[in-house]
Length: 87
Image (tube, rainbow, N blue to C red; front, side, top):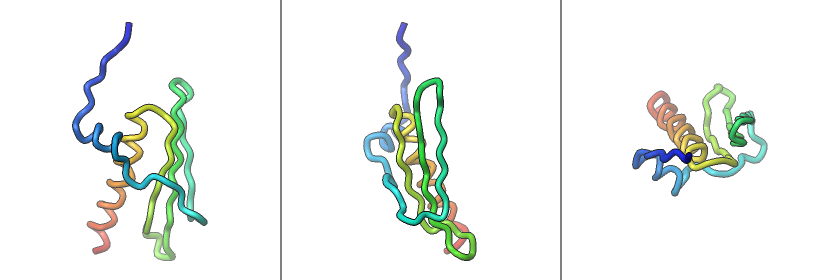
């Protein structure tokens, strides 16, 4: 039996138009996480300056629409948080 999931408009927007996709060359940090059960893999790249402020973040995700959307949403949330703190 299949399960139908009704995603919010925001999740669908981030799935169809993900933000901050890609890699950062010479990243300060790279993290990888995966879900063995469903096969999703997400890698996030961070560029951190000398004051420990995240200047850029990007991601690459192999997985379902929800995995892509939440990866995109995570990078946007980080950018909004940094903007709130440091501007």
